[in-house]
Image (tube, rainbow, N blue to C red; front, side):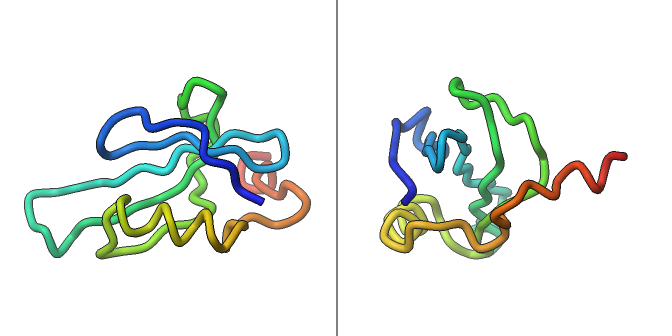
Amino acid sequence: MIKFIKSLNNRQALVKYENRHFLVSESKPDSPVRIETLVFECDENGKVIEWVEVDGEIGTPIKDFLPRLLARGYFTNLSEKDDSTLFFN
């Protein structure tokens, strides 16, 4: 289950999943068609510690993505074991 912790600003939120924190962040370039919301592992303050995205959607603002993520309760790209170190060894 994913738990909402707090909004950091109007384009970022902090959530928690199994004792790990994640930043839900909307990237909003000049074109509204290019809105993208991505999720990265972070510390308890929202500082990203792993730049491998664990979830997200293209064309979806955070205000639409976050409620669906919380209802779903899991990340689509986060495996049960942490394989992120495979990319850096």
